[in-house]
Length: 289
Ligand code: C5P
Image (cartoon, rainbow, N blue to C red):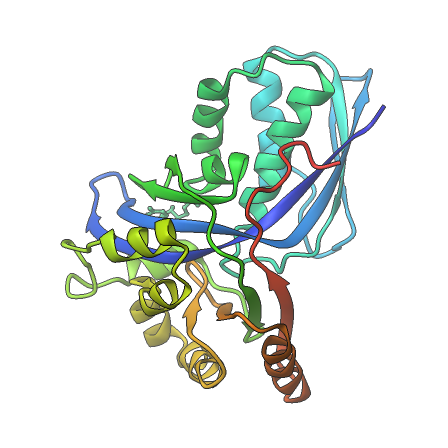
């Protein structure tokens, strides 16, 4: 029997880069939030020892260059599995857009293979595997609303964020996460960033407090490299409180009223911008379907 998993997109309500590290990464304080927008993965066990990845987006690699493939290979090696797997990936989350699509797909493969092959649910080991695949893969294993520290891989689950309609707008080009991080200047860093007001707003379900405390250190670097991202954010910010997603280039706006979100999405779409109307999701189902 194949196993299905949903891989949800995420935004960061706060992404504060506090310091440079000596290992090439940056120290973060971030608040992750899942959206209903998701990719779907179907995993089928194979008798033969090989990993086959097929994807409805022909622009994506289907071998070791794809994080999904590497997640399966890494898990197989860790648990010494000699069976193979066919992974069918249906993409809906835009690629290299700051929405953790690839990380979420990789996490879904880890979850899905544990179910498919009835492996021990040793979450400490799985979190370790996930962290080796990417800084936000551990968050994607669990999803929901969570605090990330370290390079983003140390996760503390938070009370669910109150519901928002979320309009995503993408300027139509991809960005490289490493390039954005590495063009941060010393002056961009926020060593004393205080998460308390956002954590308090989340704990109280205070929507006004949440939108007042949206913040992303990476915007400065991304706007310098691609002024089109700032232009798009400014346009969206006329409709509702807005922020760049992760390392960009997608920007999001948070709405409480569905009609206002629909109106904003429609007006941007009319101008030819790629737009998604989605929603926050409080507790994604761990096992998909
Ligand atoms: O962890 P991940 O592979 O997603 O990171 C991609 C790149 O983004 C890293 O190689 C690094 O250059 C940068 N990065 C960083 N600090 C972080 C996360 C990512 O500098 N906390």
